[in-house]
Amino acid sequence: MPTVFRNGLLYLGNGRFERGSLAVHAGRIAAVALGADELRAEKQSAELDLSGADVIDLEGGTLLPGFQDAHVHPLFAGSSLLGIDLSEVHDRAEYLRIIAAYSAAHPDDEVLEGACWFGDVFEGGFPRADLLDAVVPDRPIVLISHDFHGAWVNTVALDRAGITRATPDPADGRIRRDADGTPTGMLIDGAVGLLSAILPDRTAEFSRRALLAAQHRMHAAGITAWQDAAVGESDLGPDAFPVYEGLARAGELTGRVVAALWWDRSRGVEQLDDLLERRERARQTGWFDAGTVKVMQDGMVENGTAALLEPYCGRGEDRGIAFLEPDVLAELSRRLDALDFQIHYHAVGDRAVRDCLDAVAATRAANGARGNRHHIAHLDLVDPADAPRFAELDVSANVTALWARRDEEILTRKLPLLGADRERRHFPFQSLHAAGARLVGGSDWPVTDPNPLWAVYTAVTRTAPREDVHAVGADACTVPLEPAEALDYGTALDAYLTGAAYVNRLERETGRLAPGLAADLVWLDRDIRSVDALGAARVRQTWVGGASVYAAT
Image 1 (cartoon, rainbow, N blue to C red):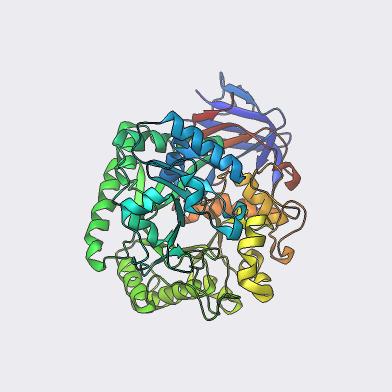
Image 2 (tube, rainbow, N blue to C red):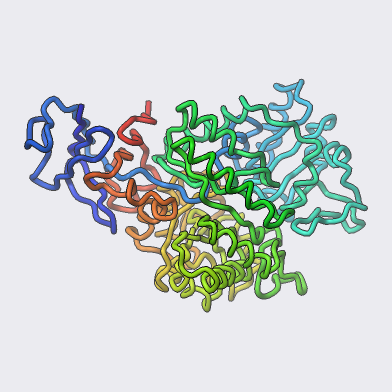
């Protein structure tokens, strides 16, 4: 039976909102009518019979294509929701209260796990083991930071993992230490892998529940498709591939998913056969796509592991860590591209961004332009000379827009390491757009909230929405972070629609309100023609292929 949506706004792309109505039939958009040409629940023509159609009154709200997230970590986020979840508070005392309560409620857990603390609530930006020792002294506790680039652990965890003054830093990470070399309880990037021996194996049922919880949360934010940015065993967390495979075969996967397969830095090109086998297994499910590979080239500025062209301020000649040598990065990129994998690079620092662009340039020189839709995620710093290269090399700029604001985490832990000159080109969204780069949007959830409306608000205003609990500090909601780098509303919104659909290889299926496309839709509770409406806007209902996957209660 057809469905007609009426009495609301339709978002048509490029910042254009129109009063209108839309008809859905057999899971696809059958017709769009604007203004006075309203579709009604009666026979319209031989081609479109709406007699007896269900009618959904949008009540003055807005109907958009389903949002897409081009960089997200659902299994990690869902695991956080099921463990010690610190994402809803931003306060050291509250963290310790939640941790103590969880520990008391789970006396039989051999290891306690959780995530999503922020460093700005701790002196010096990093927590210490003794804080955890005071509330959990007798068993290991491992708490992953909100950015998923570090772990806060207690003394028992350090002891059982064998991490001492004599333990060397891994090539792709760091152990935070006191002046005498004693580990403080903070492990950064690749050093988190030192904990692998003490972490319990996740049961298949736990992982299934975690991914289903994350899927529900994303649908509640109006997200109908996403690219999972780390699928495989890694220092970031467990392997999501068998979980997706199981949900797809069971008919429980209700979003359109691209799995970015993890490139293991400890291995070489011998892993290509494994990646090819996984791509084919995903194809056989008929529901999710594993034609992308995730390559990490650096860490993050706050931890000193982002790879910079010039040294960090106040740290001598320290330029951070490039995880892969340029020739190694170029060769793996060439090999992946030749096999028609899309490459999803992680690059925060300007040196890492240049390394990735150089790798794509070398790949195109060797393979030609194969149209594999490579993209670079985060882009905290981009050297101005490299901005035009995104368009020249057809590399999409995958921006994490909700980060671009002046909250305490940025002001106290990040900007002092960059200095005034680099601060001016911090998250250069408009510079990339002006240089012709295709912008796509990703949340990096659980690093930040998955709500695309908040991300769009921040991309346009360069301030935080007041509704975000992590918008901490006097400047966060009122003083723009480098306002010259703000995007116009349509460009920011389209990054989470047509832009993300492009890198997800879904632009012929979703991302626009147009006849023939899949009825992936989100109904918002209000008129959002003003960006000021985005912070408080709520999702009323979300559909994928015409089937309801979320309805607000």
